[in-house]
Amino acid sequence: MAYDGDEEQSQDYLFKIVLLGDSSVGKSNLLARFARNEFYPNSKSTIGVEFQTQKLVIDGKEIKAQIWDTAGQERFRAVTSAYYRGAVGALLVYDISRRQTFDSVGRWLNELHTHSDMNVVTILVGNKTDLKHAREVSTAEGKALAEAQGLFFMETSALDSSNVAEAFQTVVREIYRILSRKVF
Ligand code: GDP
Ligand code: MG
Image (cartoon, rainbow, N blue to C red):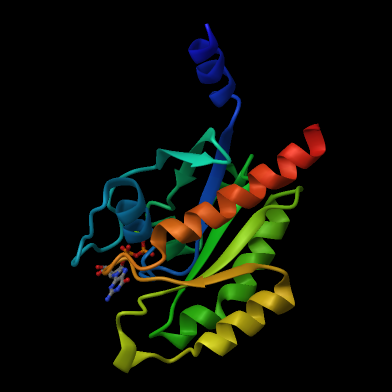
């Protein structure tokens, strides 16, 4: 049956994607917004999920993105190598209203490159664009850093949903593109 065939094929695509970035930049809320359309105004360190699997359709293919959250490990600079293992994509998040979190991006990139031996598709994400009056990092700065490091770039708001799905989709689409080029 053609329908069964499609289902079987869709199970071939499971991409592990990790969330990276300093504490409180909004990683857990980006995932909550993307996977459940929820937002937690007062969340502290952990919303409680280790990872969440979300289905996406790219080029008519159903793809499962298994998105890993740090569960607060980053607070203690103790993100384990198991967290990175097998990851093919990453969202490296900073908070546009806290420059310090942007200054940490290089450190997160080093860590990612230390723990993963393949080329992880990475998007640099400047979150909290709703905090217009508190902005400390310009869009141009974010874009320039992303270009220099060969990363995708997007600014998001988990609060008002802006660009959240787009950021995840960008990573998944690129992984799929690389993969289908290699296979066929
Ligand atoms: P994490 O430590 O990186 O996982 O960050 P959280 O998702 O726990 O968010 C930290 C704090 O920032 C929480 O109080 C969130 O409500 C808040 N937050 C997250 N995303 C946004 C956003 O896009 N805009 C605003 N204004 N606050 C946000
Ligand atoms: Mg969190």
